[in-house]
Length: 68
Image (cartoon, rainbow, N blue to C red; front, side, top):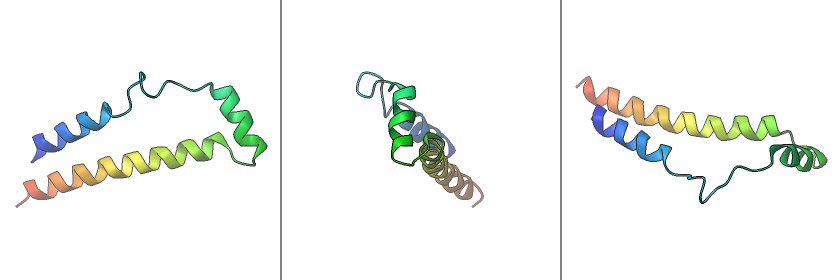
């Protein structure tokens, strides 16, 4: 179970390749978001929170299966 969880996390790490999702011009992104009253920090924190919570669920599931 632990190895399967690690494989799943490794697979997720490849989910957004630069070829398909090139890095944006962050200064431009910050300016455009700011014009709409949204901070880049808030968007980044929301995205990272979603990612790390999902990875945490994979890890927690694998760890709880290992305790049985």
